[in-house]
Amino acid sequence: KVELQELNDRFANYIEKVRFLEQQNALMVAEVNRLRGKEPTRVAEMYEEELRELRRQIDVLTSQRARVEVERDNLLDDLQKLKQRLQEEIQLKEEAENNLAAFRADVDAATLARIDLERRIESLQEEIAFLKKVHEEEIRELQAQLQEQHIQVEMDISKPDLTAALRDIRAQYESIAAKNIAEAEEWYKSKVSDLTQAANKNNDALRQAKQEMLEYRHQIQSYTCEIDALKGTNDSLMRQMREMEERFAGEAGGYQDTIARLEEEIRHLKDEMARHLREYQDLLNVKMALDVEIATYRKLLE
Image (spheres, rainbow, N blue to C red):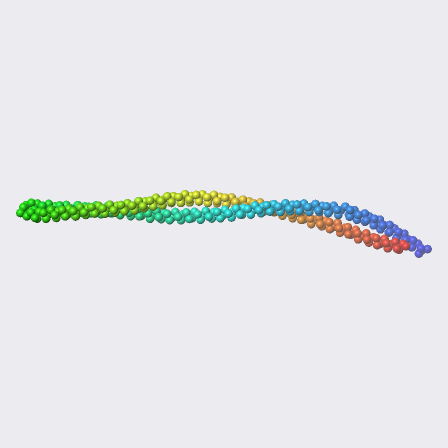
């Protein structure tokens, strides 16, 4: 009887334990079904939604970044063209300044030549005046000598042949004097004409040089104004480029923060999903253990 009672008690305990395990198994199955039917789906949907939002924001960021890079490249191209044009304008200005300096040297040389011609003309005029004075003095002396000789001839009536000789001498002297005066005047006129032509030619060259110098000054002023305008445009483009780079850097920083936040949320969702999957696996393991234990008890009951 004692052994039978012990067997009955053990059997009752087994029955009670089997019922308890079956109840626990049913609860575990229900929990597993709930997790399998609802939680993973919700987590997956949340993950997919966040992932789609992240992809959308990344696409927006990529598009904006490409647009900013295109604008930056366009600005760089405009800036390069502007620098090249500025360099060309500076080179043209330097050439104009060099030409102006050369024309100034030519003008100075022409001025010196004109002054030298004027000095030579003045010297020739003085020399001609001196020669005329000398010739006039020689003529007066000859006339005086002839006059004295004429008086002497008149006093000496007995020598008619001497009077004729004196007249011939006087005529020769007067002819020589007239010839010398004519040659001197002709030489003077020739020299004055040559110097006048040289002076006129020099004045024409001087006027042309001054005109060209004035034109070069106008070109330099035009180039200077254009260079100033190009420098202003260059400064404006550089300022726009700096502003765009600063704005792009700020937007890129904001996008990087957004990406980092979204990546952190994704990691959090992945961790949460992994935790739920581990819980699900643990429940499956418990269920399998309960199934094994129930099967064992059933064999013992048989």
